[in-house]
Structure formats: C-alpha cells, structure tokens
Length: 93
Image 1 (cartoon, rainbow, N blue to C red):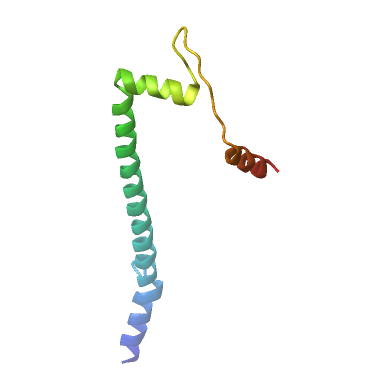
Image 2 (cartoon, helix red, strand yellow; image 1 turned 30 degrees about the vertical axis):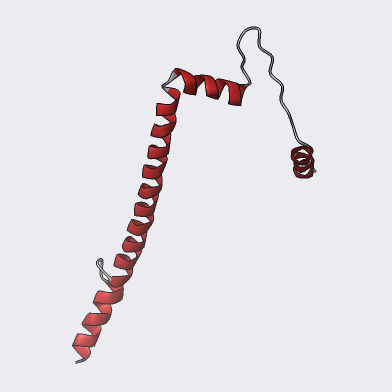
C-alpha cells in the first residue's frame, strides 16, 4: 500500500508527465484557442473592409469620411455639435 501511495504521489506531482504539467498545458492550449478565434474574427472583419474598399464608392467614402477629401469645385462643412465639443474638452482636462 505504501508503495502504491508513493507511486501515485510521484506520478501526480514529480514526474515529467505529472497532473500539474498537464493542467498547465491544457490552460495554455485553451488560451491559444481563444486567441485563434479572436484572430479569425479579425480576419473576417478585415476581409469585409477590404471588399468595401475594392469598389470605387467604398474608396471615395473612406477618403471623404476619414481624410476629409473632396472633389474639385466642392466645399465641405464639418459640423460639430455642442455636446461633442463638451465631451472632447472633458477628456482633454
């Protein structure tokens, strides 16, 4: 009986294939699987973005919204509402 208990303790805690090492590896594997799922979702999102930018309308929309570009003989007015200005000032302080 003593030999069996000693063998069980050795296998659970001290052996190279111990329960603790398996538990650590399983938790690391779970974290890597979660990371893989996150990157798969990001790839899908990026593919949709690339598809939207592959059209002339999508490219023009990006240029107008993000970079405030305009066509010739066209004027652009940027309207800021009071609440958005207040929120910006609150974050700056």
